[in-house]
Image 1 (cartoon, one colour):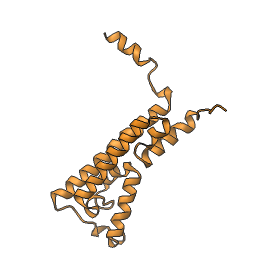
Image 2: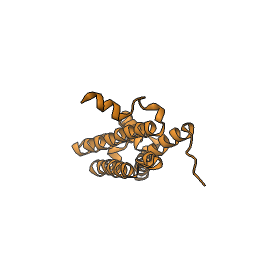
Image 3: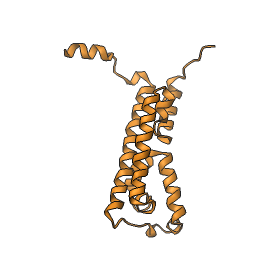
Image 4: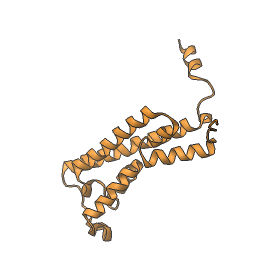
Length: 151
């Protein structure tokens, strides 16, 4: 039995959702195993290093740092787990957004930047997975023709 490839109308959104939920998941689904492994390790390590540097209460604060949280949520399951830890450690912050701690230490700011950069890197990988999932997004010329004219 030959395995029929999924049509782009299914493959593209599925690759995007997998790439968002698990860093590298979209690339793994598309068969780019090495890309997927590297993406998973780099983005997950960067995100959780930021949380370790700045603490989960000061780094991932959806109510206090909305713009940074928008970047952080691009890491998918990592951000969701960190938000769960944030509310588990500081249960009162769920009831009152004013109780979310503002960073008073440089380490908390560095942690926020690490986690935000990890999210933005994963956003680039989501876009890359979408482009790789649908060949019609690529240019009409193959790469070899583009480089032949340049030499």
